[in-house]
Image (cartoon, rainbow, N blue to C red; front, side, top):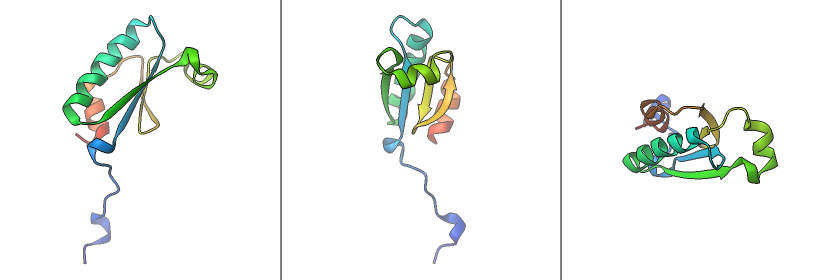
Amino acid sequence: MAPLFSRSTRKNLAERMVTLIGKPGCHLCDDAQAVIEKVCAETGASWEKKDITEDPELHHKYWEQIPVVLVDGAQHDFWRVDPQRLRKALGA
């Protein structure tokens, strides 16, 4: 029997989801998207983009922080995305 502490609930990289919350015409959002696309291509993680101009709840919550990056639904970063920090958050 394996020890209790060896159990892991970590997700496989292919099951990880990175969400970019931004808006059209935002140069920081474009920069963040380029980093996310590269890191997700390298790691096999999935990513999606959400537009705060189309979602009042996201607009209210994140307007002053865009771009905002979520990893598996939890806020990871805002304004600038560090590729090494994102890889680490994904477990790569």
